[in-house]
Amino acid sequence: MRSDVLTDAANVDIRRQQAAGKPMSIDDNLLIEQCRQGDSTAIERLVLKYQNRIYNVILKICADPDDAAELTQETFVKIIENLAKFEGRSSFYTWAFRIAVNLTLNYCQRNAKLAVRSLDSEEASYDHQTSHALKELLSDDSSPDPAAMAQNKEVYEIAIEAIRQLDEPQRAVIVLRDIEGMSYARIAEVLDVELGTVRSRLSRARNRLRDILEALLS
Amino acid sequence: MTESSDEKRYDSEARIDELLNSYIDGELTVDQQAEVEELRARDEGIAQRLSQFQKCQTLIGALPRAEAPPQVLEGVKIAIAGKALSDGKIQKKYPRVRRVLAAAAMIGIAAVMTTVMRSMISPEPPVSEKSSASAPAPREFSGKLELRTSDLVAVSASVNKAIEGIHHAEAIPSARREDKRIYSLSCSKKNLKDLLADIEHVWPELDSATLSVNTGVFGEKIVVQTVTTEQVVKIVEQDNPGKRIEITRDFAVLNHMESHLTDRAIVSAIEGQNSNLTHQWQAPKPSLAQRENVAPQTPSQPEDKDTVHLTIIVSW
Image (cartoon, rainbow over all chains, first blue to last red):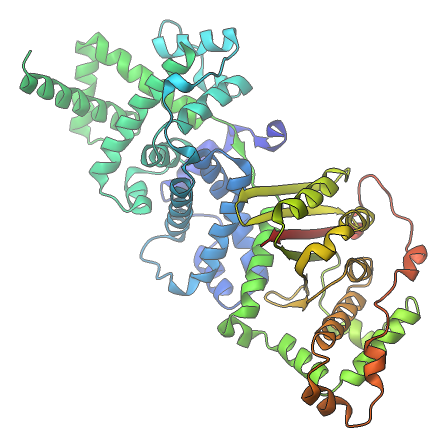
């Protein structure tokens, strides 16, 4: 299934530009106003515009496609229900992601299934060549291209597993920064934390991610 | 080394790590960038650390992206439509369903009953131009079937099995909630008929079965309480959207009235004192006598006009 739904990473730069606050192609304000008036076409456009990005972020945080689909749906229902309360103090994009991340983190906390597990309990075994290549990547002895490696299914699974083993606040900050490409300031808005907290949390998360990857590959 | 010096070293490493990561992310001032470049040039360990962070970041950032399944949009529409009916504020914007149902129930019930009986007896009656034109129904059937039961496990197992038996159907089962199972299904009409035939045996185990049919107008849906599998099939198999809405409304009224037969006040208000319509209300449920008349459908990939979207929710 995964191979069917995955897209290439060609639009990473565009996403990052949008996440950093660059203007978007469709005027969100107009779309939101139309949605508030009950325009079903506008609502559909709004969902279609953001559903892939929101689904992708939720999926990377909660790690389950069924849960991610359900949480994405729940996010949009909540967005549409609360559009009247949206005052525009932050951008719609930030507001929407705040709803999505809060719902997802709450869901993860309610369902302890995503609790951080001890690395000792991991029994996954990965293909030798893949493990070797990733170890090389981490040890800096050689220089394989990490972006190309990420397209490998096995590497994908190892990376996803590593993200999954981060605690939830670290997972959220890594996903918002490295996958969604948000600026620190925007992450602070989405997570409702100080900029310094984003900085330190992200640093700890990358440190831990590197440790987890090494542990998974050892 | 003392505890205090350990802490200092840790703080220093943590600060350097923060600097390195912020450097990678382009979140440093010019002065801080210069500081990192100096550190990197001076300390090989820091240079290696920076490289590792950078590779980790590139690896995670380049992971392939997943696209939201198409059922998400459908699910949002259904959920919003469902909330709209129970939400007074939104309902005021879309009062047509209320008006139609109220008018049908309190004023034109006898006429509606006649229509229902005619539609059951006479297959494929012509649809008036007026009803077709006024019904903004979507070409494809889209709706939600809610099954409430005290035996969630058995009923959801039957639904699961039936869905698994459908080829070429796209289904997203969501078995993550203890009190609910949600299945978003996109398949051909024939597949749905087969599925309903497979799960018909669970109907006696249900506390309620409710079908909500989207009308194509946002926020508007028609709800058929106590729906039977035959009624679902009858609604779904309609090619003409207007006709589909018409029949759905008929079933909604029929089932509603059946559940209120003991309410003499309503009966007398609608029929007068000497009506024999109550006998008609107890007439047999709509039969599937028209099945043979349904145009043959391709069993493999359903054509667009043949595709139906149904969310099945099993809950207790």
